[in-house]
Amino acid sequence: MAAKLALALTLVVLPLSAAIVLRGQTFLGSGMQPEVVARTLSSVQDEWKAQADVFAECNGTSGLPGASIVNCADAPSSFGKSCDTVVNAIVQGSGGDKDVAKEYMEDVCSQKTMSGWHQNQCHSLAFVVRGSMSADKYSNRASFDTAKLCTSFWSTLLDGEKHRIGEVKAEREAAEKKAAEEAAEQEKQDEAARKEEEERKKVEEAERVKQEAAAKAAEAKAEAEAKAAEAKERLAQKKAEAKAVQEAAKKKMEEAEEAEREQVAAKEAAEVKAKAAETKAPVTPPKPAAVPVEAKAAPAKVEATPTKVVEAKAKVAVLPAKAEAAAVKATPAKVAAEVKAAPAAQPVKTVAAKPKH
Image 1 (cartoon, rainbow, N blue to C red):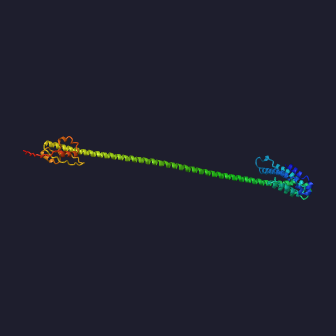
Image 2: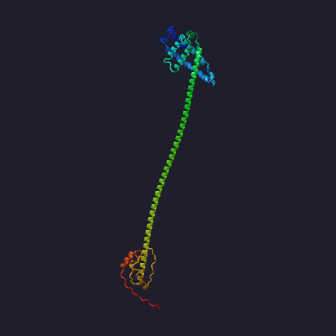
Image 3: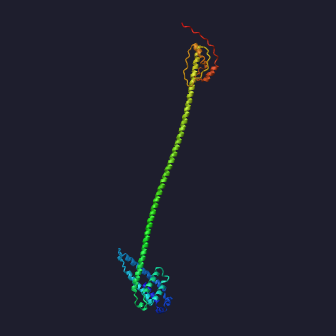
């Protein structure tokens, strides 16, 4: 690559005498091809940068395992040879005139192919070359010390690359640190989000269990209330049935007592009638007295004497003989009706009691 630059510069300085006489005008003519030199120099600059990077990295890792595989001294020597060719071409191409060299390098460095780092390095090289050239054009052409200049330029280039590499390394480490911190923060946030999600799920599960328990409790309560209402209804029904049975039993008892009273009254009336028939004495039957409901007194015995019969006519009524059979089942109303229908009582003949001897 350095040979290409030397060839380009040699082609540029072919009309050397004209360049010396006309200086910048002829030197900047279209025949000088500064754009070709700019492209060639840009490629050479890439090689120099790579050599400086290799040396800076190799020198910075000399104590690490495997560093001996690469010979770090090759980078400076390779750079020295390339730099010597380029600088010598600039000096010789300018005829040793430092002003011509400056003007030509400014034209080369201003080409479109030169930008950024390449343009800065181009201006730096032009400044170093011009500063190293003396006012004696012949001395510059005959004995210009390119090795000293290239060594100085290498140091400057290497320091710049070390600084750049340091900045890149610092930026990389900062980026890695930031990435690690962001990753840690993200992991922390993810962990917090995971815990929050777990807590949310726990709360939702607890709420679900609570709702299910409440639903079951409500269902159990409703079922219990339904059973209680059903039991209450059955109890009321049973009470109503028991009350109806009780009232029916009471009615039956009253009917039985009434029938018993009627039977007793009929029996008494039949007995009275039978005794009256025996005495053949008509007796006006009295109206039957109402028998108390609770009274169950046995009928009084009637003696078969005329006196007793007369005394009992106010108490009992004599029924016709044909009603005697039905008197047992007759009701007081029926007895009263039969008594009313009976013939009027005949006067009772009193039989004088025989004196006892």
